[in-house]
Length: 392
Image 1: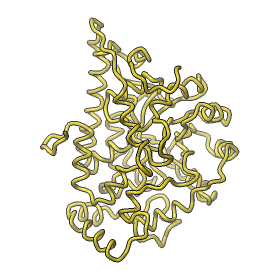
Image 2 (image 1 turned 120 degrees about the vertical axis):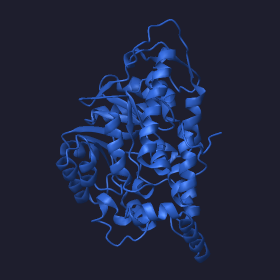
Image 3 (image 1 turned 90 degrees about the vertical axis):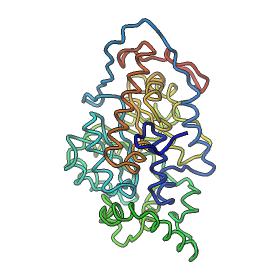
Image 4 (image 1 turned 180 degrees about the vertical axis):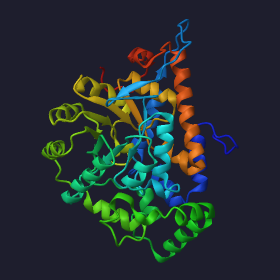
């Protein structure tokens, strides 16, 4: 069991710290999934079900975790995934996170619904970062966001495709983030926020999170996270089709990656639409409950993509060993979401710096003990298990 010792070591340790330090509605917002949370659990359990094959007497005196991705070299095949309202969990979280990511030599992706706007994150970044986009009903707002992203040097755009409608997140409903609380419920909610004094001073007061980042111009009357979320939820467009991807391709000259692909046929359509890559993802178990885990679908999507798309994956990655398993499944790199925001919420930037060092150290050991000294040596032969839903 993870403990709250002075030196947290694992992702689970940082999750425990975040749970202690965040008001319950905010912790559940980042920790929870949709409906019965079957897909949320499956994402993690399917990684655990895969066994790495230990190999011996291979020269592993030099381990090389570097990769080339979208025209740049990175220190390891890990990127920080977009987290909506991340700045509610730690003071100016997205600006802190991009600094930590670039110091570690890995990509950072900013969410459309971040607390820190594009321009603030650009000032904190050591170079170009990625931006995640939703297709809002207001296409004028979409074009403005694209122009702002380009202006601050964004070259890689992740477009989320698995949110035509919102999956119900029951934890958020119980906690009032989805609205509908009684008077008593609101009083209890206020008491919970007040009981977390360190968070209230550091984040709610000093962090000024209710500025609502990139979308502040469009939600001037929002006063609470629930107000902001209600506006965002109303902006999701259920009419979006592949024609809209072609429209987006015409507007965006940089790398275009579709996030939320979970079916091989959709990977093939993504390639035809002009996308440069896909992220195999079930939205962290926060949309359609009961679907396959991302790691289970990755080999089939890699097969369907061939050499036409860069295939990334996210969902359930909790360690450097999981990263190696994802690479063995065929992914070029992984995105981590909950781990980085747990670390930042639990121990600030020093927590995230330490967690990224842990991921890299775990990768080093996993690669050494599977006889794979470089990323190019990691293949399907390194894992055994039964979670694959189809071979490569």
